[in-house]
Length: 180
Image (tube, rainbow, N blue to C red; front, side, top):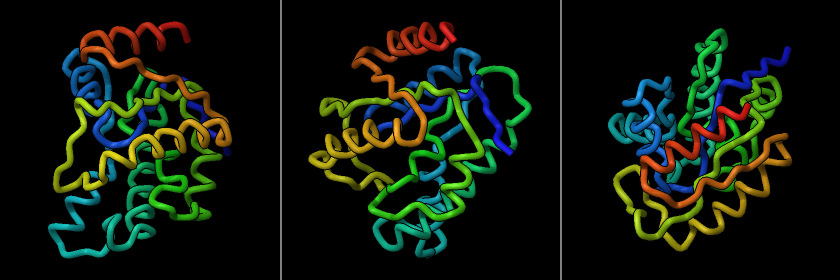
């Protein structure tokens, strides 16, 4: 069975592009949001000494994140308000060079977000690393290119988010979703 949720909007892009900052801004404005799962997986695996870290066992990290993404989608499946996701199931498709698992492939097919996926381009001026984001800036343009190529293969239309202030980005996104 396919569940299509045109009121579910995904933000994607490489690390350090402003997705989470915009999610938090929208949440403060009263929008329903879902936090990024891979960061929670990384925090929990690092704290417990687990192997499910992208730099130790990328497949395990992908599987743990996929399970959480499926759970979030299913938990909100009856929601009629718009929901903004800080990343979605499609973010694990080919992530860290890992071939998509059958579970991920089925989830991407059966759980459909809005066809428009907001892609945040690399932005050097705001990029930074931390304990959970270790990727070097030089990899971000390739990550962006891969996302823009992969989304149409998965049945989604990439919509590039312009580099604007957080408030202006929020207005731009809300204008785009109100056209749905």
